[in-house]
Amino acid sequence: MARFTGKRVLITGGTSGIGLAGAHRITDEDGQLVITGTNQQRLTATRQALPLARVLHNDTTDPNSTDALASHAAELGGLDGLWLNAGYADVRDIDEIDADFFDRMMRTNVRGPALQLARLAENLNDGASVVITSSTATYEGAGAASVYAATKGALVAMARGWATALAERGIRVNVLVPGAIDTAFRDFMSNETRKEFERDVVSRVPLNRIGTAEEAAAVALFLLSDDATYITASQYIVDGGLAKR
Image 1: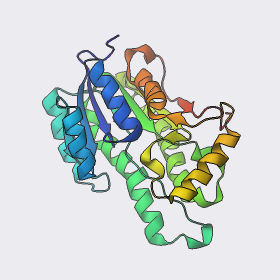
Image 2: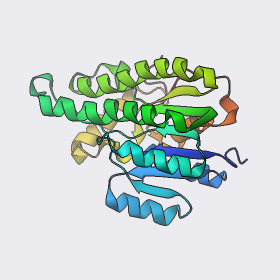
Image 3: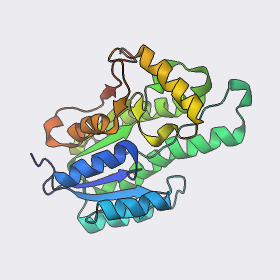
Image 4: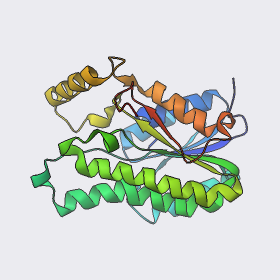
């Protein structure tokens, strides 16, 4: 099944994890891709793995970086899909949160996607689909993840407004809400802390396992595709039942 034949899709943060898994699937289904990232090693690996894609170094925290994305989108003839997936996680106990920690995460996880959509809105073709990657951290109430959860909750709130604002052009905006997925997203943790974290999460997941990047990406691709043409302003939780929402 080639759902993306003739479709042009931009994925931010697409050189690893869920975004990369989705990029492979879109390529397999005949889509044209623009992929962004910041890690040079991952950028090089992605260029080698997906030679037909445009793989760009693009820093979400730089407000001026949106112009480059708009230029590539225009060269493609506009976008049929936009997956705002770039972001990062970090945790601190509440008494260790400082202004730099707070501002950096807000710049990357909230301001970045907001400015990207603001700049790229004119490059979205009528009937396009936008997917925003949030997190079940929004609902879990983990004490050390309060700032991260706030950034991901902000994306949910903004996506609802964006869905309303873009509906007159038939553009859909939906949110992917992954739970514990087996990616490099928790690499900021030590190996032992990560193992302990994952054991704890698995103990609370009804399906009793960590999810795969491919499983989460499959839901994002459903939302990006024409299979979801009557879905907008919705959240799709991919967490094995962890959040139970």
